[in-house]
Image 1 (cartoon, rainbow, N blue to C red):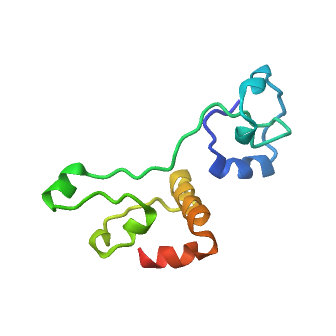
Image 2: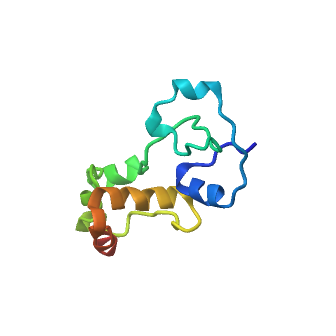
Length: 115
């Protein structure tokens, strides 16, 4: 049993065929949108958002309002303030990259060049 594999790296585990199928009776209580593997090799147990943490004291000291949108992060006043894990090795870094792809569509690479 593996616990805590998030959906950003789930495809790698499924492609590696490391799980055995198990159809839990609890799946009847799980919304279909969270069931990412219809062969039941992975069972959803929770979910979370992609979030950015920020230093409230820094923003207050520098008289900055915290960014509210992905577009805000590309503004000059936030240049050099964002740190994101490497998407190839960090599930949170990959989740953030995927979130920008969902938000900006195929223009997401242009967005990353502005950061």
